[in-house]
Length: 406
Picture 1 (spheres, rainbow, N blue to C red):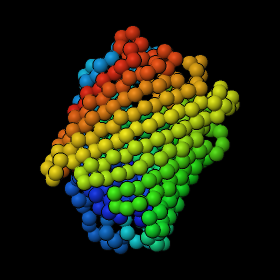
Picture 2: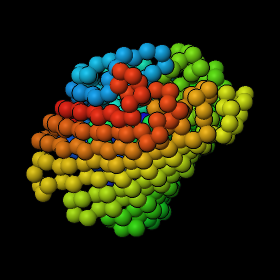
Picture 3: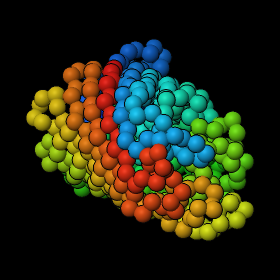
Picture 4: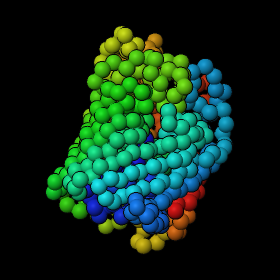
């Protein structure tokens, strides 16, 4: 999950004060998240010999309604058997030492995300191999231009944040769903003028196998325009005995939860551009992922996944209301129904989706609604879909979310 990056990168200082106000983890970042909420200032206190320490956090939950529900069985993870329900979304607290030569960040809690087109699930402290520890790293920052972080670090991939209140919508896109989240590793951040860059090496997708390389380069043209280019690749084969998200106690090959063999053996290239004019922020993003044929890894032929999205957020004056949303297109190819694993929703799936989210926020409290609609343009291999028959190409998701930031 991608929320912010380790301290000391020096990227976009104008955003840093706002970032600390809205995220459960207060860290100076190389990645600029989609800021939809303006939370209260975090609590700063004297840590004695440690210097100033910062505490922040958040808690939210949601009620949902779905169309296209049906009896769930077999390997069908799309459809829900419940038309209505309620779940806790995220509960997290962060402690950070953000200044000095040696810094640290600790984020603890229960996490969840809701991707458009997937069945809602309960929040969990077993998503990662580290249990409730979402992030935990020590940062050495010899200057404001260079820093190195070691521990459970954040991802450099993609635009969307890993905690929902950092995004313009409650629902996340297909692009987010195939990206790496947290992992164990080391990250180097450097910056000079309008350019900043980060490189990370670790066990991508929380596999416990240290062979995954990520990179992010950002260029700030001015205070309202910036370009970010990111990439990642697996440097060697990760076999089926590796665990991954949601299945830390057993290999991914024995679990239907978490990324499959194509994701943990993949390479990615993507970019997003942030444009701000007054109260309007627009961010287009494109992303391409592929996994080459590797019989020993269970990948029977080369397979690819493409995604494109346009995010937007508009704040109505200085009042408590804002409107966020996105539209997306996704297309996977080269992986048949007899293959093992898939990119998103089902093998060879292609589709379009949209989400629109009105938001009300007053101080510490926020309430958001979200309407998301997904349509399969080809139905993939026709293996699974929506509705009682499992063949319908459409699903609508209705969400009402409420939360507290501190």
